[in-house]
Amino acid sequence: IPVQGSPKARIVTAFLWDGDRVLLVHRSARRRWYPDVWDLPGGHVEPGEMPGEALARELREELGIGIAAPSGPPMHEVHSNTFDMQIWLVEAWTGVPVNAAPDEHDAIGWFAPDELAELRLVHDDFPAIFGKAFAGHRASP
Image (cartoon, rainbow, N blue to C red; front, top):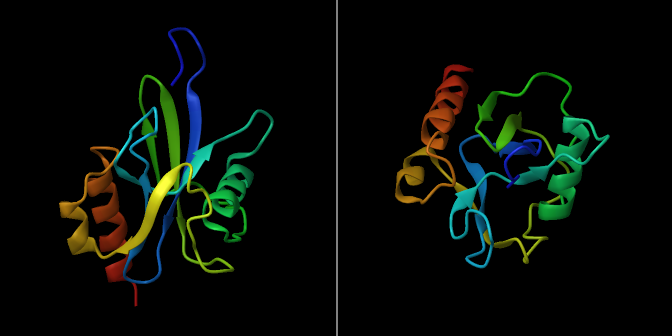
C-alpha cells in the first residue's frame, strides 16, 4: 500500500463466473496486506502495462488459466485513498483454475451467491458488487 504522496496502486481483478458460481482466492494469513480473507483473483498493473494485459498475466500466474485480455470497460471500479481497482467479468477461459500461487493464496474455491454471506471478504463493497453481477446474469436467458 503506497505511503502518503506516492501514486495509488492500480489493481485489476476478475469476477470469474462459471454460470452459477464465482471463483475466489483466500489470501494467506501471512500476507502483509489483507491477510486471511477471500478476494477476487488479480493483482497490480505493472508500469507500461495495459489493465487488460495485466489481468490476463495475473490470472495465468495465480490460477494457471488463459483469458483474452478484456477490451470493454470493467463491470465495476472501486476507488480508495490507496488504490484504484477495476473488476472485469470473465466467463471464458482456457485451462482449469488451480492455486498456482500458494505463496499468495492458501486456497481457492467456487462459491454460489448464497454462500458468500458466510465468507470474510476483502472489501465491504464486494457483497453489493457481487449481488449486482448475479442479478444481471439471472436476468439473461
